[in-house]
Amino acid sequence: MAKIKVTKVKSAINRPQNQKRILESLGLRKIGQVKVHENTPNILGMVNKVSHLVSVEEA
Image (cartoon, rainbow, N blue to C red; front, side, top):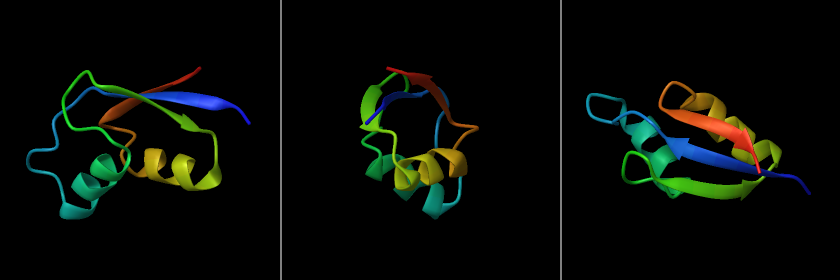
């Protein structure tokens, strides 16, 4: 299965609680932090919800 690299590029301050929880479940805590995930529908749905806070690349 393909992998994607998710990088947090903006702060979660003044964001709804569900977006903060999504970032935490993706494993992103600090700005600039990078995590590699499987390219599954669940992960893509989470990334879509916080697309304004993260950047995504294929790994």
